[in-house]
Amino acid sequence: MFTHEMIASFNELETALYNYISQNSEKVAYMRIRELANETHVSTATILRFCRKVHCNGFSEFKIKLKMSLEEKKKTVIKSPHHSITEFFERTLSGDLEAYMDNAAKTISTAGSVIFIGLGSSGILAEYGARYFSSLGKFSLYIKDPHFPIHTKFRDNSVTIVLSVSGENPFTVTQVNQLKQEGSKIISITNNKLSTIAKISDINLSYYVTEEWFQDANITTQVPVVYILESLARKISAYFDKTR
Image 1 (spheres, rainbow, N blue to C red):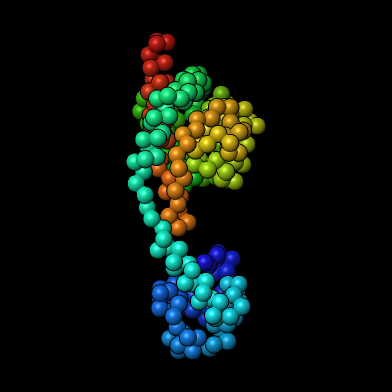
Image 2: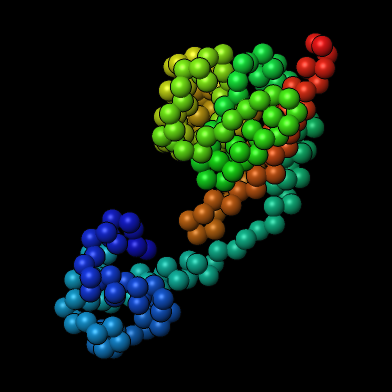
């Protein structure tokens, strides 16, 4: 309900009012403007100014929006990922993901270096992927900072493995575009092949599971990503064994 821009615009009194509302939202939704003014030690004029800053014409409209926000939070239900994971593995066994992973593994095995990139939960998995690949003999590094400088010696003869559920994160798209222009092969692991990152990749590995959100957080299961990462690493290790 409160955006970063709204919060940044609050003065000291409005910030105190915001803090009170955030901590007592259930109570405030049923208060009168005079009651809120007494509780927070501000004037009704301050409350009305606060309401305008959060795009409400008055305190009544603000309370309606506050109640709607509270109701939306109550409706949010965290579902079991079992169905999505089962669907993924059924598609994997009957689909062509295995062939795409074989192609990706061959590309990675001939690269001089592997760079993993991702943000948020994808950044955590990028770190895991780099460690797992390195453990099986393919030295890799991970980058979770979208502004991290990548020097030429790392880009030379490199493969970039980019992780993104939506495939639309603007920071990741920019980073992938830069790496692609500088000669790095791009392998993306995304939830679908129609996303921007998937389209600009040399190889895309899509897993297609139902995307889930809890309030503003993306809680889509990452089990398929772990499966793909570990499968790729093992395929690369097996490829090395054959060529020795």
